[in-house]
Length: 431
Picture 1 (cartoon, helix red, strand yellow):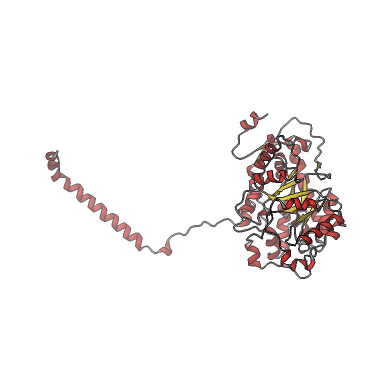
Picture 2 (cartoon, rainbow, N blue to C red):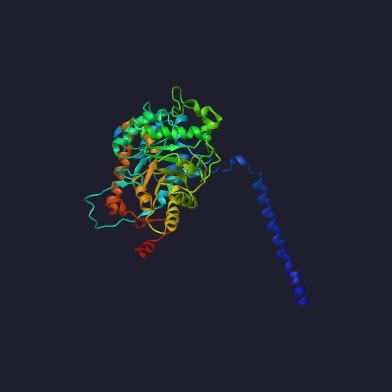
């Protein structure tokens, strides 16, 4: 071996010289590269998507100009119109979420990831979209109005206009604790109201508030449980958001100035027992996103839950509401031991199309709550704007039912939807 190596030793000097020349050439190229001025290099043309681009990923209407009245044909048109009318601070107060607003976008965009599976040769000449609720009420279609604070910021009639529109459309409005109109005045406009309640540290004040709600004729109490303190809403911080002159939180008058009337962040599930002990109204819990909490609400004999992440205004990067719904329904059915659950399940967050509503109902929701679309309708055209937005969603929902071969809400089930990761073969195996 050594002999062969020695023999080839004299002949291997030339390749080594060639390697040396290559190295020298490489070094020269590196030196040239280092000397090239950075400013002359081509910059990246990548720009991160804006919030609106994320939000409207599957509803791509992005016109900047205010559309004409005859162009307001969907919810996005109303948002575009509202944006052109409202000042920056007000628009962002109602439109924005917390932190990087990832959940704000995902609440809406996850609906596009769920596919519909229509059936054919179904007589759809008559469709019944009405829904009976555990509160003893009946609504004309599975769309309800979510609690929205400070509505006089959007329109001088505020909550009164929204209540009239909801009543006229045959559905329910849930009035916010942080309303800009006294609860008694809102109740004069509708006989189908629910009241969204924050439990305050001063329990006697909270108790007196509940008694006012009962006396005014509200039909249910919705306890919000996902806001022990406000989320990090950076748009509000930058804009120094505050109520315009003349708009007050007249629901609670000056009583909220007391520290004892801050939202109680020491609440536990046992506090629901206290609420139930002081009212005969149905009690629902708003802000459930975990299947474990849904089961606890069921065990507490709540009349219903609202699957909600507070419109993505609290904790960012939480699971989207429609993404959470299937697991919640499965957990409740396992707990109940039957498919018929003695508790209504509702959902809010990101609903912008009638097809979104159908997907939610097929996955187990009794009805959906819409918030921001109502705010846009109210700001564009007051009571009529709210009616128009509800009418658009109702019309789109009825069309989606028709095209999917669904004639009543009892027929809605998960065989009509394909979740991300599922295949049509999986649906066939469940028939």
